[in-house]
Image (tube, rainbow, N blue to C red):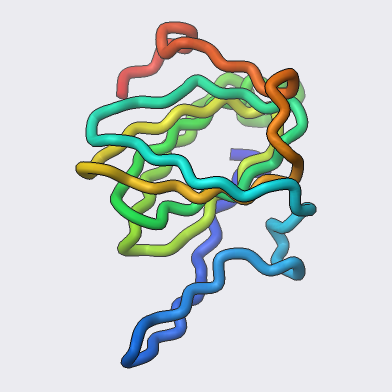
Length: 140
């Protein structure tokens, strides 16, 4: 999908414990820093639909497994009205770079999963639109 990127993160293996670089200011997916927060989701639960007018996100699953679904409703996009499904887990560290103006929802696939979001702006309830799952026709 246009402007959504899946970025594999380097794991530096160490006998005492691994090191995983999540985000550096010289990474191509780093825009600016607004806030970083952790979101949890329980197995078979779905959060969404969410839409950010300005926020760019960098999402990584720290624990568990999650299915993300993105819908591009940007009229000028080559992916207009198309879905992108991405499944991430703590077994393969990858970041999903998500631009603004994309609808998204996600479903927990493990007992409890943790997502870290590094966003370019501070949370602003006026910047975000939330809709119930019935708003967009998609079968999880």
